[in-house]
Image 1: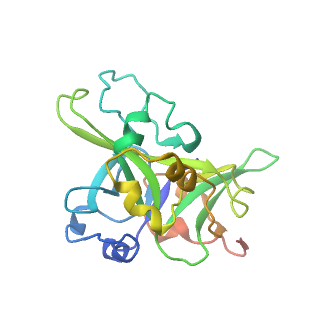
Image 2: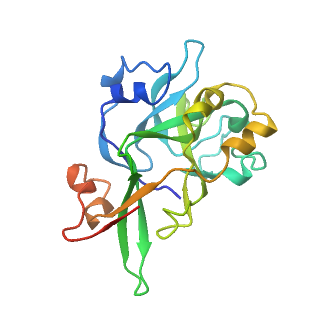
Length: 229
């Protein structure tokens, strides 16, 4: 799963990550070392003008929902997107990309304690996670726009910490993912798979456990700890 992530790189840097992106409104979306559910994050969705950068609320509310007690998932399993009523409409026509420098995962020890890890590409370059977004106009009496992150089975470099990881798409799939039309079967097979990207796992302090903490200390390696890739 992915329950916390970091995006501290200036949004302009993502113009080199997503073709056609313009970050001219980047001042509207604050940087954060500790993005948590219920907070806003920088998300790219498709538009008539090309990739559009917007701040969306993390916790998915489908367009049709009128039930305030309905769960607001932060993740969606890639294997069942076409089957789940919560996600299938958005999967057809409201896919998005979530800007990211790295994400956090907690490894549980045999004693029950949990160690947070900061997980990034070994290239140390910013990247995007695949997601879904929705606009709901019925739940709160005003439009709300939300997103969730798609997860898949963890690859070899991540599974020692957790069996799931965010879906990280190859660059050549970005435009098709952002298009507001259903994906063909071959495109689904090509995109919804275990990411072929080497990741670095860095143990960090429990400072990141609190969403109120937002500073470089969140991603600082524990003194004397090793890193794995």
